[in-house]
Amino acid sequence: MKEFQWPYSGIDKAEFLARIVFVEEILRKYGVEYIEDVWETNTWAQKDSFHVHENIQKRIWKRGNEYIQVGRVYFPEKPFLVLEFSENKESPYEDADPFPYDLSDAETEQEIKYSLGIETL
Image 1: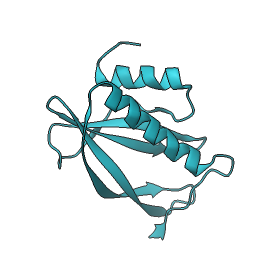
Image 2: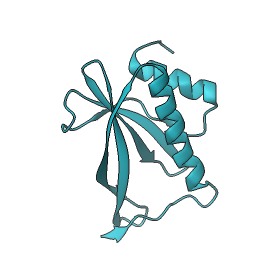
Image 3: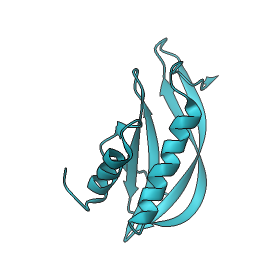
Image 4: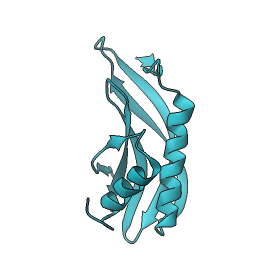
């Protein structure tokens, strides 16, 4: 299995990672509590049918009885972000609806509020 290579020539990976931090700031704004960092290995299928792995450091957050992580989805045209939810810190996380990483700040906040059940779209 090959190591993951950033698949977007026109998208800056640092800008994408900065949006993850922005999403986490919004989580904090709405009372979501930071718990800890974890390392995860994700496997992605690429266009050439090869699978690659990516080691990702994620933060675990908690709101009420739910644990939350900010995940990523690599669609062909651009990467998306997604909130992932679980009742247990170690359990598999279920994805909410993914959203484009390059939404405006206000649109991103709306997506987060929707995923948290604070507001409907």
